[in-house]
Amino acid sequence: MNSYSIEVENLTKKFGEFTAVDNISFKVAKGEIFGFLGANGAGKTTAMRMLTGLSKPTSGQGTVAGFNVIRDHEKIKTRIGYMSQKFSLYEDLTVRQNIRLFGGIYGLSNQEIREKSETILHDLRLSEVSSKLVAALPLGWKQRLAFAISMIHDPDIVFLDEPTGGVDPFVRRQFWEAIYEAAGHGRTIFVTTHYLDEAEYCDRVSIMVSGRIEALDTPTNLKKQFNASTMDNVFVKLVR
Ligand SMILES: Nc1ncnc2c1ncn2[C@@H]1O[C@H](COP(=O)(O)OP(=O)(O)OP(=O)(O)O)[C@@H](O)[C@H]1O
Image 1: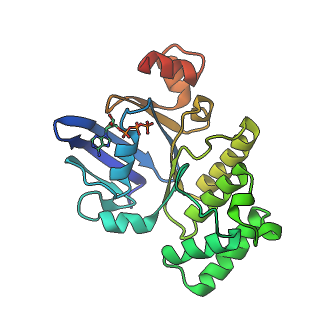
Image 2: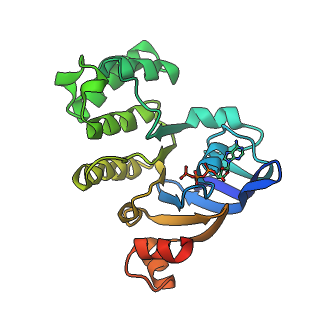
């Protein structure tokens, strides 16, 4: 059995003459927390869209959750979860309605939705606010809820696109505890972030510059390699 969740080779995306993602190759092990970093415009979103089956690579090959990124992109969508900072929950629906809605979208039966709803509400201690509009929740709670909902269909991999924007370090730390828990259950976490302290929490980190992966290793090894005391310094040395 393949021990990698993601395996890509020379993945490239061009928009006309412009190469947004330039021959990237890497593997992510099952249950790994993989940080996907890069400056604005480096190509992270474009790469992530190819990995999640939303965009067809111009060239290259690979598998995500065991499915071919070119031929089986519709199947990939059934085995992954996705959470972005910008598009996550419906603010004008209640907490419970959001869980129901996404459970339905991900193809769960009514019985499964009922069970998952109770588990999520209980685990996140949201039972008392289950009939409140999501708009009324603090941002940190919304993020935790969106993360739980992105895993409602038990995906092999969860893609998190800047999941902790706009909250304080304590709330971010709590979110990362939830990430560790998910990874502890064997789920692969693929996460982009602009917070370099969060890169330290990842098992391995890749750093993209102008469409290419310029560095990829554990935070400890990257700091050694770049003679830097923090991931922030590694990033600055590579990107600026
Ligand atoms: N559909 C498109 N057509 C043309 N150019 C595009 C398209 N999508 C992205 N690009 C360009 O590709 C490059 C990479 O963009 P991308 O959004 O992947 O970067 P990013 O690393 O995710 O940046 P950010 O952190 O700002 O989201 C940018 O120069 C962007 O302008």
